[in-house]
Length: 153
Image 1: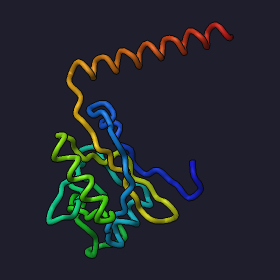
Image 2 (image 1 turned 60 degrees about the horizontal axis):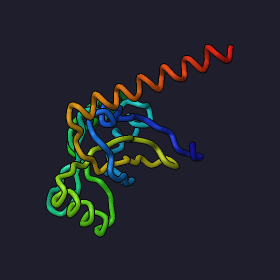
Image 3 (image 1 turned 90 degrees about the vertical axis):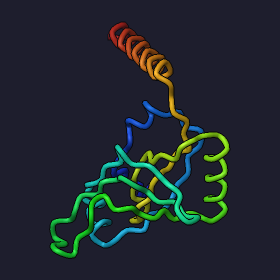
């Protein structure tokens, strides 16, 4: 792990439901109470997704719990959050999403030198049989590792 890199939340369900084509790191526009809540580890990416609006990318349906010490000046936990990317990156991502039928999914939320970053994946949805085969591969890999461990003891 790189120095100053602290993982806050990971979207493990995304690895099961999607096949990742490419990933990119983006910054987030946050309020003070949101960044404090993230630093406390109170964020959830499970149902989140990225949507384009007016030439910008927005992170939607990501739950950042309200910060207790903020009182009445807190934030709405599910509000849309703007992603910070260069214009050429946004244009490239949007063109790839439209032409190939891909989706933009948040994979990981982390702190990098004190700033909140989100890793976004350009992803293709898996079919049901793909999900079953990946589970089968994972299970067989576990059995092999277990057998090797028992053999070495």
